[in-house]
Every structure is written in C-alpha cells, then in structure tokens.
Image (cartoon, rainbow, N blue to C red; front, side, top):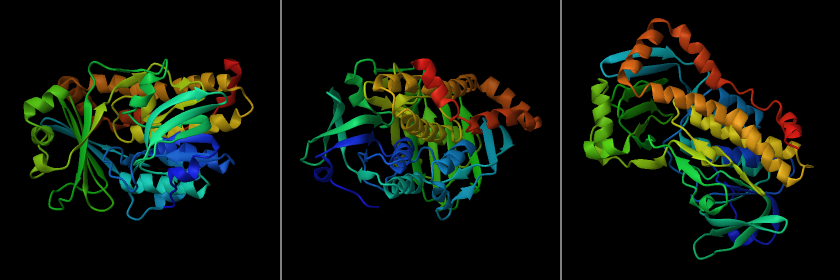
Length: 395
C-alpha cells in the first residue's frame, strides 16, 4: 500500500478530500480518481486495521463493488460464499437459505478497497485525525492532526465518511446528530477457537429481548462475533463478554471460552439520524450520515452505495453550482439510502419482542419462500438510476 505524508499533500487545493477510508470513502475515492479528479483520502487508522463489524457482503454490496471497478477485491484469498442463516430465539431455531452473499474480514476488505482507490490515482494518508472543517472562499478547509503536525488542507469539495463517531461534524450548522432513545450499542471481537462447532459458510444469529449476537467464520478460520445490546443490559450482565455468553447460552449455541477476556471493540449508539447530510461544499456519507441496526450485510451495502452514489452524482453534476449539488445529495440519499434504513429499522423494532420473533421464525422456517422478497429487497442494487433526474427537480 503506497501512502503519503501530510507534508506532501498540504500545498495545493484538491478537487475532492475524502475523510474516512472505510467502504464508503474508498468507493467514492476510487470512482472520483478514475474520473480524473485529484482526490485526497484520509483515515485516522493505519492499514490493515482491525474492525469486526460488517464482514458480510450481500448481493447489493457485491454488485456495487463490481460497478465501482473493484471486482478484484472479491478475489481475495479465502473469501467464501455464505449459504445459510441460522436464527435462534431462546430454544427456538430455524434456517434460511442465503445466496449471493460472501464473508470477508474487514482487514482484508478495507485494505483491498483502499489499494484500488490508490491504483486509480487517489493519494492516501493514514493516521490523520480530523479536528474541524470550515468554509473559506471557494474551498472547504479541513484542520487535521498527525503526530506533531496540524496543517489545514483545502478541497473544492469534502466528503465526510468518518463513521458513527464524527464529532467534528457537530460544530457544522445543521449537521447535528440525534440518537434514538431505544438505540443499542454495537460490540465485536474476533477469536481463534477452532474447536467450537460453528460451521463455515453459515451465519449464526442468536436473538433475545436484550439484543443479539451474530457469529460467522472468517476466511482465515477465526470466528467473527458481532453483537448489539441495550447499554443497561451490559452493565447488569457484568460486561460485554458475559452478555454475549448469556445470549448464546439462552439460544443453546456453544459459548466462547473466556469470552470476558476477549478484546471487545465497541461503537457508539447504532441508531442515529443526522439533521442533514450536506452543508456548503460538504457531503456526509456512509455511517456518518445516519445509521440503524443492520441484519446481515446491510450496513456495508449502505456504505458502499453511499460512496457510489455520491461519486456518481458529483461526476454527473460537475457543471452544477455547489448549492445545487448539496440539495441533490440530500434528495438522493433520502431516496436510495434512508428509505432502506427505515425498512430495516421497522423490522428491528418488531423483533425486539421475543414472542413476535418466535412467531416470525416459525413462519419463515415452515414457509421460507416468504423471506425471499425481503432478502431480495435488501440485496437490490438498482440505486444509481435517476440521479440527474432528481437533480433537475432540485434546481
């Protein structure tokens, strides 16, 4: 991976500055750099980085990676297809078939996507913290910090794809985020436990009234454990490891030995909504634009779709004034991202009830064809149509 330093990139005005090199930011950087823009991609971490959430790629994510010129990412060694989703609610269980779904560690996925953005001409600088951003004449300034350096970078347009924890956006007028009062927090860990009978190519999902735990085996044999819990329950259980063990035990699934000693990583509240996803010369995308609890692969698909749409829209609307560009992004994001997030939120709210979860599980297990329209809806990637049509309405 070819990286640059802040000293190399601070003496020019970039066409695009992308903040955050996750799936949303890397997708946007790849497409925009391929179109001939000068693109600066920044991230606060050094790659490859450890991140345990979002290791499942559904059909929508896979198709969008291909349309973004990153099909070779899917050829990473060891990447496997997922064929089954095993749902557990207490003592009740049921299986649903999965198709066109892959499992891939975030270390491999994110690193490969950044490499593709660099191959397209983007300049990548890791280990950079964004402190603030503000307008200055015909550009947007981004104040950053790396070690002892605190330069101000300038871009004609800034794309903020900095995830759930994007505190610097809170000072931007109109971009404050609101957290759902019933929001859970996400936690996850990866562990090397080959003795547990969790099969490859299978997603295990244990659900309870306090939250859920998902387990899948990665391409290198490790178990990826991702969960979402009510914050109060984690305290009552005596920690994240105990909360995970309790839910797995209730679902009659194998408990991970000494789960309380695993290196658990957490997120902020999962269900968030930002007041707006745009400000002058600033577009917010990916998780930073708003998020709800996902199921299997939706979160990554939303992120890639967000980066894809923002880059395509920016490229196609190049001749439009920036005021039109921001209005257009709000409309496009609402239509293609927030709409699916709302559908996911409704389902998440319904299955918080164990009684409803068991009834739904029983129904889907006996008539699995009923689940196909729902899975096809979340797997759909027909999102890029009508971008410029929406723009004409926004003028």
